[in-house]
Figure (tube, rainbow, N blue to C red):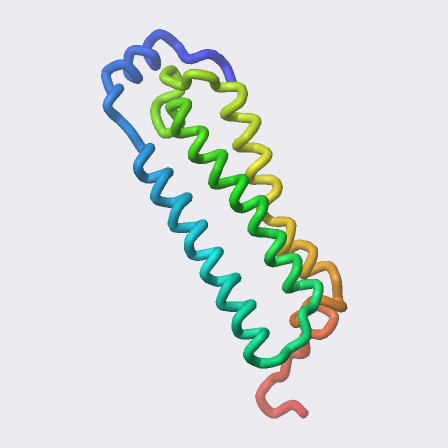
Length: 135
């Protein structure tokens, strides 16, 4: 990415009041709350049904860690003026590094479940398509 042109900088300054920080905070908080509630409900349901705790249960609990890290990176981004125009970032490099680390760590759990046929409930090799009239 090249440096902003003088016209872009002028436009950023004219629109200095543009601020998505409340949206970022709301999205991070809602995502964390929904994820933690879903995992707690899953654990409660597994205990109530006396189902064995499998690797998928442990992985989904472990997946809360990178999700929490991602939300923390959003909170830190807001602290360094993330959610505002780029010229207002106080420290752009740490902001970008933490953001990239957060978004790459988040999808690990679904990928592991999809690739491992022993933990996956719906694995591509086990999918059977039944057409009307077929046996």
